[in-house]
Figure 1: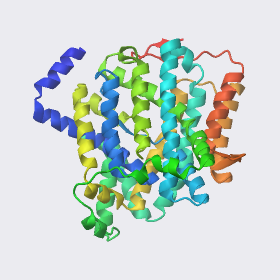
Figure 2: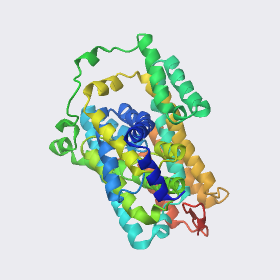
Figure 3: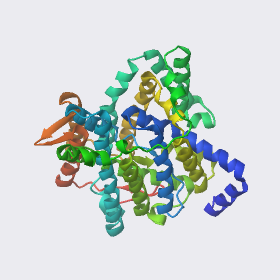
Figure 4: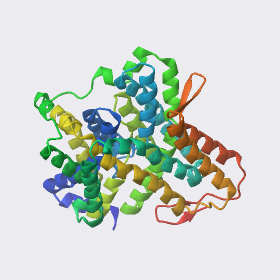
Length: 439
């Protein structure tokens, strides 16, 4: 279908139907986006605000052409947990420790601009040579496995509620039809939450004290608090612990651009260009982190909605972004989300963390990584054992002088370094948006 005809058809739907499509995209991203602040301790309202603002900024930088929604990234969860633990160990509050983590994520967002500049200068293929699937696949696998322990800990608070959430997500995803199929996470949260309320497991008394309208940003939840505290050692530790994760999320972004291009039938990697979409994603991530929101990333859930509706007009995505911004100014709504039982979060996150690892496995399989090669086995093996071993065997980080590096950071750095120095005759293949391979 021609792109111009698709846009024309979207306009013919009229404003009411466009709004409904926008609400559907809001639902598609909502469950996963609000789950990240619940898992990390960040603010739900600020998260929604910068998911909306970040999406609009992304559309502006990508010339208003790419129908992508930017929501909370799960890839940085290990980094948030690691830095928070380091900060609390040094006597900081959890809130201030998370501010230090946000500083690290903001710096990670700047790497997107570096990658965008390199791609613009040297071309996509030459840059991706340093980040092949044998590196990024195991890193993504490790992210899910490292996070699994926290999911189990939450599930143990009430296994019944956790299992209800898990069963609802699986049932909705596998056997659901229409919109049910594309919002399994949201349904899993809602069903488990409602049952928890009926069982008397939720104390709603704080809900009555929350205001209907309020401003979501507070000074103590921004990285300004970090510079006032001025713990230079922890600053460096958080930056070194979190920045390497950006290499994996950049690869995720590139994969998403391939998927959206294939769905829409337009090569967004060439026009407006991968350097523009990367810059938009990085800018959204850095800006969100400055104000205490999670890192942003392009959402596959919304790509699924595009494929389902066959309406590719980016204006529909921008409607969803505006709705997210409006919800951010309702503290009562944020309070309702924050009262969610830990077991409900645990059940849903158990699936999501497993899916993160599964994506890494799929990356290895789809790119046909040769694990009969000793070279590739060494790279993949060291990434996995370092990430998991440091997490569960060394209290989540290793001190190198005054700097503390998380297992994920060490694994990413070692994997990239080994891949760069070890000789290989294997050429990297990158699929174009039409599915053809480029050597």
